[in-house]
Image 1 (cartoon, rainbow, N blue to C red):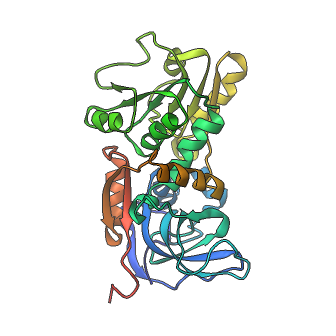
Image 2: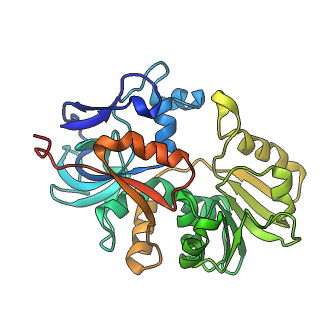
Amino acid sequence: MIAIARDTYCEPDQLRLRDMAVPALGADDVLVRVEAAGVDQGVWHVVTGLPYLLRAAGFGLRRPRNPVPGMDVAGRVEAVGANVTRFGPGDEVYGTCDGAFAQFARAGQDKLAPKPAALSFVQAATVPGSGCAALQGLRDAGRLTTGQRVLITGAGGGVGSFAVQVAKAYGAHVTGVCRTAKTEMVRSLGADHVIDHTREDFTAGGVRWDLILDTAGNRSLTRLRRALAPRGTLVIVGGPGGGRVLQGADRQIRAMLLTPFVGQRLTGLMSTQPAADLRTLSDLADSGALTPVVDRTYPLERTADALGHLKTGEPAGKIAITIPPAGAES
């Protein structure tokens, strides 16, 4: 099979297209013939090995445990292990896996769900990581209830574009914060109000929200708390800062240390992608309540370009990689 790979942690422009062996299956594994793969900030972290904390989390201390990056996947089941009961060859699935940037990828059956019928493979591949982060950030960490006033920063990005739709599906009054070029897109997702952060500072207007989901990561805790109701909840999803060791996690840590001393709930989010939440997102997609926004697609050989576009911060919604069928490369 062909795949995008590297032997060491590196910058995205050092990724190379290679001919590699098809992954071997364990008893609980599913082999997926990949149709499309999603691109998000997590992929950039895994490729570069930053922050260093990520390496200790199982991705490999000195070099990548798996030379093929990519986690979010959509495709068809090629084969299953002896203990797999949920899927069979030919089933259309989506979820997370080891090495999505390849023609075949291995995934545990508990990390996959049937692909939403309403979505294409490209659309479905963009859902797992960002969709689960949005769902868990609002429903679990944020304890969202019907009628709450919710503010979502970075509403035009990957997690944010899903969060606007999930919050509306759960009956919230939603305000989205984004740059000028994305305001109409955020409004089309169902946001009740859209703030262009280049023209208006939402932390300075005196308005308070019950729940803030901060996916943009460029505002201080002090400013965010100013926009939060006295008993409101702030959920921080990643962000810059923290250097090469804690990159993206330092504000989450500071928020959790501060929350016992204030009336507001300040918390971070470490999302996962369980099959149950994938099924919840599938239900939302098939009901018409959730539609992924795909900014661009790239062929597998241009994965480095996809990651470069991601880091500009310009994509509206998500980016996907399309995978050529086995044999097409010859």
